[in-house]
Amino acid sequence: MPPLDRDLLRLMAVLLLGAQAALLDTTIVAIALDDVARTFDTTVAVAQWATSGYLLAMTSVIPLLGWLVDRWGGRRVWLGAISIFLLGSVLCALAWSIESLIAFRVVQGLGGGLVLPLVQTILARAAGPARIGRVMGLVGIPGQLAPILGPVLGGLLLGLGGWRWLFLVNVPICVAALLLAHRYLRVATDDSHAHLDRIGVLLLTPAAVSILAGLSAVPGEIDTVVPPGVLIAAGLLLLGVFVLHARGLGHRALVDVGLLRLRSFAAATTAMFLFGLCLYGPMLLLPLFYQRVHGFSETEVGLLLVPQGVGTMIALAVIGRWVDRTGPRGVAVLGVVLACAGVALIASTGPAAAITTLSAAIFLLGAGIGSLGVAVSAASYRDLEPAAFARGTSLTNVVQRLGASFGTVVVALILESQTTAAGTESGAAFAVTFWWILGFAAVTFVPAAFLPGRQARRPGPVEDPRSVPCVP
Image 1 (cartoon, helix red, strand yellow):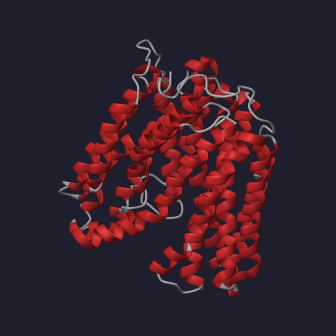
Image 2 (cartoon, rainbow, N blue to C red):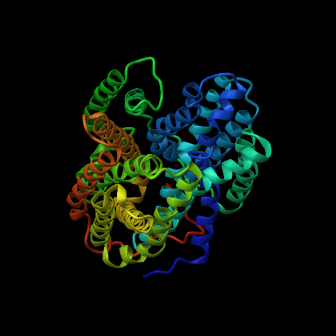
Image 3 (cartoon, rainbow, N blue to C red):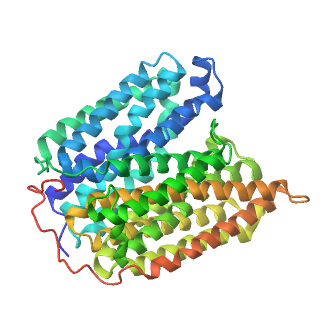
């Protein structure tokens, strides 16, 4: 296997520095909602929009990634995204009302939404098919650290200087990322005549935002003026119209749905949806399980969830080499087995389970999620031409976000229905919900079985990473 040379590792370090700020901001601000609500004399339900607005803005800009990269080149888009995120961070720290904070969080999200898909796109091109598994594994480690470190760092900054420092901490990180990008990211080739699918923008972006807003509102996480069911229905209608529109445009569409004709990409995209469901469903359920059934405090719950993050990070660190050697299919199946074993252990032992048993179970769950994530990410790029990487990344990222939101909603509704059912106690309600999650995880065997089983045909990167123009 071709090694991960110094230039590729340096490129990864430069990109992940900027990505870390965007990753932390998905979790670091949630801990300060009470303080924000008190500062601006509002309710937590209103203050929650500072988080929801950020996440929705991130989603809204992802479909534009392919056109932006085609039009301006990967380097310029990266520098622009980090700059927008930096501007949004400074403005959030200077916010004078809850309305201004929410608006500036949207600005932050517009930059942050491009950062993570860009990391995948640029590194997939630089690594080539023979190294993609190891690269995606290493890239995923900061993503697992962020949910663990975010609340911890947020709590420290909140105690030392107040909630405004949660945004100011991004300034040195983003400045360093911009300086390093100017030094190490080469000038990319761009196409001034790249076609912007304006109709696609007017269809897909509102569709994604509407569906996610509706799904988020169903379990009562955010308040919306329009009923959640109407938002979801409108989003699905716009999505259906976009698919019909995109089929007629082919690769010129905002998101090329024709890529789904590739078996490996279609299987990876389906698995990505289920991956989002299997990851975010337990992320919602496990903290509640520890708090309501076992009576632990929020601080204790944070520590008890560490084994899941450790399991994921270990899998990400070692599993990429297996993907590059044997292909994604076997690793993905192994990931599903591990995740199912972890969930089954929690569901079968019930509320009386010892903490050591639960820790072992969520370690297995984390290892399974990490293995599946690396395999699916590698498979999604296997048969794509480099010119299609950006648009393929857009599609898989939107699908994963939809899966994550769908998983959160479904798990919340199942738990609520079990909790309110006559004669059902809290512990039993959680056990039933975990069995449902096990069923969802088991379904992932189907797309995992259709992932490629051999190493990619193209033997390695086509260019030296030092001269790779980021993305075409």
